[in-house]
Length: 80
Length: 80
Image (tube, rainbow over all chains, first blue to last red; front, side, top):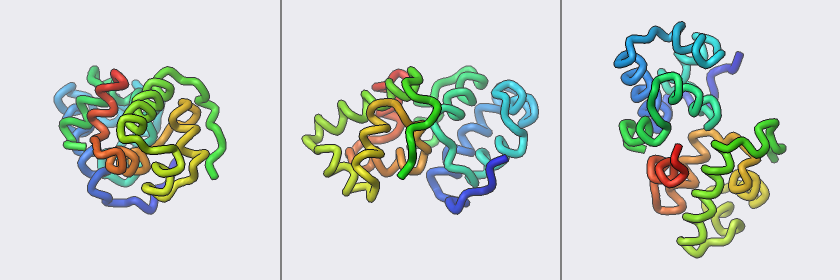
């Protein structure tokens, strides 16, 4: 299970995490349901949403897909 | 120095790598110049451009910034 990276609370990560959380809630999914949909641990999803993990592109692509959106849209919402 | 991940040639990574390469060339930068601008190894930039590395968000943010663009724009160009 990935440990919180040294990037904790980096503005890029917190902005992206907030965009993911916003989209997840719009889809009416819990962190647990999203985690199951992408085959990841719920705590990992929580870390990503809190901006504690410099998520890589492939897991992010899986998260975007499970949230029926695109990485580009998530980045636009996060203003990144 | 990160080794090529098991994700070699994943379509998401090759699409993103091509978008980064396209943007780098539009900025008339060599891989070496981009690598120096973001404090990374030239071979890492080469791996990312060839789609051999599931690049994380923070290095990607640095690359986008050095290429005077945004992650969202790179993702749009890569259709991700």
